[in-house]
Image (cartoon, rainbow, N blue to C red; front, side):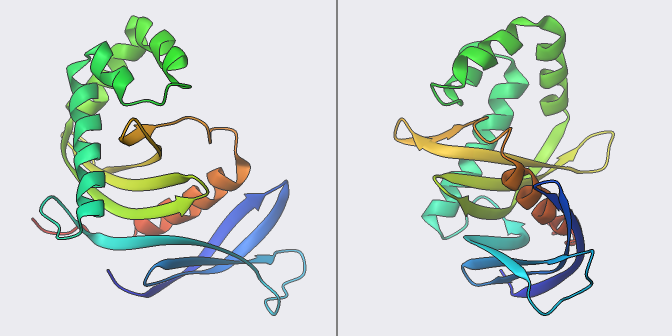
Amino acid sequence: MRTFELAAIACVLHGGVLLGQTIRTDGENLVVSLYPSQTGDTGSPVRLSAKGKVFDGRAKEGTPDPDVEKKIQFINVVVNANRSSNEANILRLWSDTDQPDIRKKLADARLAEANRSMYGRIQASRLLAVINYGPYVLLFVRHAASGTNSFFHTYPVIGCREGLCLTNALRDDRVFSCWSGLIEDELKKLPVAKE
């Protein structure tokens, strides 16, 4: 992990355009400073902060932090379950609230095959950041896939059944959409860590 400044981020928040000047991570805190684009005033930013860690692409299996190791193992389980197309294994990954919707999606053969195919191309996954967002934890992951460049995915999870569960509870949360988009855009700029 390291402390770093990230600059020049645009974000739409509550219908108004804000221009973020910096995202800063310092130890356990992540701070995004946003400025109104209409005024050009950078003296009084709106600051959003959260507890979290950015790993510079180096978090991988065998990390000495057991909490981070659990999250890495969870991502591996997500990839393997979706690759297998086993409905029971996929449903176990989701919160009880989300399972009926996921079951419907899995019943659509076209969607299920597209999901299996996407996860089937993943050759390696790297946890880039873990950010706390209320009761949720956002796992920012870079997936290296065959036939394409790497792609990024944010996995919102919540504690359940003595572990982690995926959730779609944030799909309509505009702040989450903005916040995760800002972080993901900047994480894409990190160099790909060598194995």
